Length: 52
Image 1 (cartoon, rainbow, N blue to C red):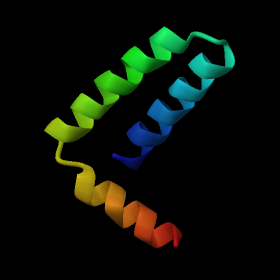
Image 2: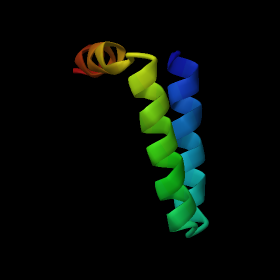
Image 3: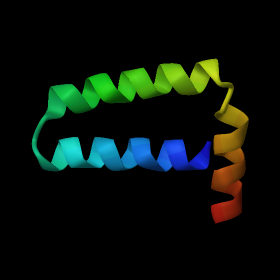
């Protein structure tokens, strides 16, 4: 799961660097929907806590 999240963030970053803002927004919305369906919110919280 973490690799998918990292890949998603990389893809979003590349779109923003290329000034493809609408595509980045669409990708973020799609990614958020996928994360919600996979119930990854707990996983994301654990990642954040580990980084602290």
